[in-house]
Amino acid sequence: MNQHIAILMATYNGERFLGEQIDSLLGQTYEDWHLYVHDDGSKDNTVAVVKEYIQQHPDKITLLEYASQGGACKNFLSMIGKVEAPYYMFCDQDDVWLPNKIEVSLEEMKRQEAEHPGKPVVIHTDLSIVDEHLNGIFDSMYEYTGKYPQYIRTFNDTGGHTSIATGCTMLFNRLAEKGCDAQAEKAIMHDCWLCLCALKQQGVVYGIPEKTVLYRQHGDNCVGSGR
Image 1 (spheres, rainbow, N blue to C red):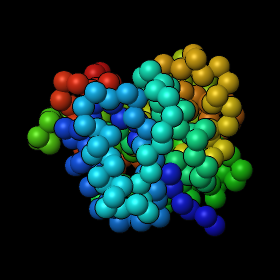
Image 2 (image 1 turned 45 degrees about the vertical axis):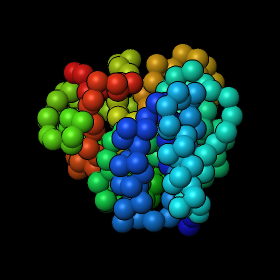
Image 3 (image 1 turned 45 degrees about the horizontal axis):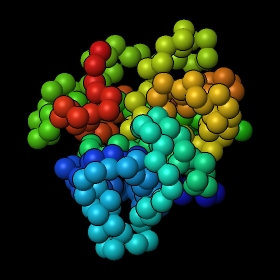
């Protein structure tokens, strides 16, 4: 079974923390992945930082070069259509992934796919909220925002709520993204849209309580940790 993972990173003026994030990907215990980056018109040295990492790791990182998309939501969703893979992960430009993030998520993916063969599956995890220096602010995003992923099992369970999972914690299979391009202009953010699309297809969105990301808050976040 092909378990290759395409990691999709949307960047914009992210040079400040970008290197630390990419380093955390390179330090993952699971190694069968490739990072795809699309920049949305940065005015700083973001693209230069990416190209420097590509020179060092050409087999692990690719810069996708096409028109700016005008925001994180469209940028992330656009990359799904550019990259073919059995599994995908969204990656922010300014966080730090804990070393076992991919491994933990993929193990749960395999369990869910075995229980729900032929179904769209989205796996997501808890995360820890930290400041710009990675000092802890709140240990659990689930607790901080009042998310109870164990109660989101069907499309109707969402009650129209758009905050189902945090994008930077998600792993999803190819089936989950089917139909996401239809009416995508209605999407508020890429992560909630993909979860809603998967559930609309009678798929599975499964949250696990392990924290796998240091979710950095620094004042320039596109979407932060607001309740």
